[in-house]
Length: 347
Image 1 (cartoon, rainbow, N blue to C red):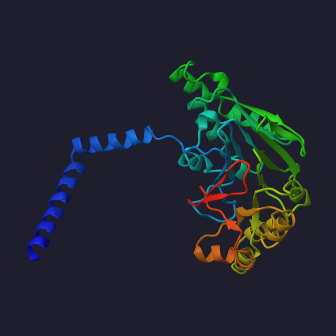
Image 2 (cartoon, rainbow, N blue to C red; image 1 turned 120 degrees about the horizontal axis):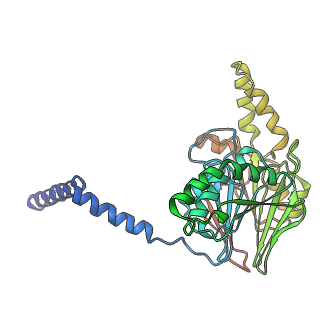
Image 3 (cartoon, rainbow, N blue to C red; image 1 turned 90 degrees about the vertical axis):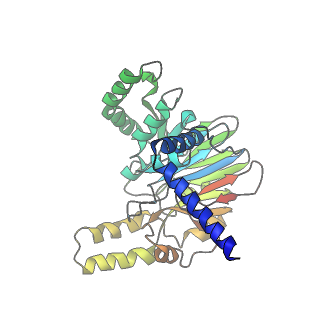
């Protein structure tokens, strides 16, 4: 028995020494890195024959959690790839999810708060350099042209540098810009024989217009709220939907934060935190509204405030039914066509 133990220990020591030798030599490092690079570059994005919804940003500006990007939802099918809002850090999540940027069809913006548009330039660049076949269409309510024109102007020099460096054959300059596609709330914004994207007005005063979107594809549907109160217009548009991603505000967390900041004499912040209450939906109101509208699955994103730890996450869900999901970045919902199933993949 002792002999077997000694043999095992010697084997472990020899293996460790061999691994250290590989790791600490140039030849060993080169071989390991080449193997990893080959695996990475040859890996294809996971394919799903249905409606896939990926959370690429679940945070709001209130709170700080480096594991959460700001608002961004990806909708992917075998024929389509759209992004709904692109807040700060969301391009990182898009890359982590290995979404097919070369075939990005467009970006839909709910409104023009910075945490919903800050990633536009990075998304435009990433899809352009990965082979997007045309300029990027950005859909939004009135104001979208001003935002898109501003980004195009700000990054004009950058695009010129990249085309000059890599050549117009590789990076055609006419594909490197974004084109605004304005619409009025309530309109069908995009449609083909398989998918329809419909807009609807939401309540986010004083921001006007602000919209949400409903996506219908092969008998399945997802609704994305953007920022809003629990608006009748949203639940009318979302009636019977399979999945509703709704922004959610927790008074259980926010009220003590306001009281603590006020008691500590923190300037400005208590007033700002109080102001956000009137234009984000109270989380406790949403579950019953979703049931009344016949929505199959309610999920909270764009949390106000962002739960900073496990305790805060439990408090956020106080008085919330167990069926409601508080998403994290890279949460994925797969909706097979012409079915009632929702396959949920946690990150």
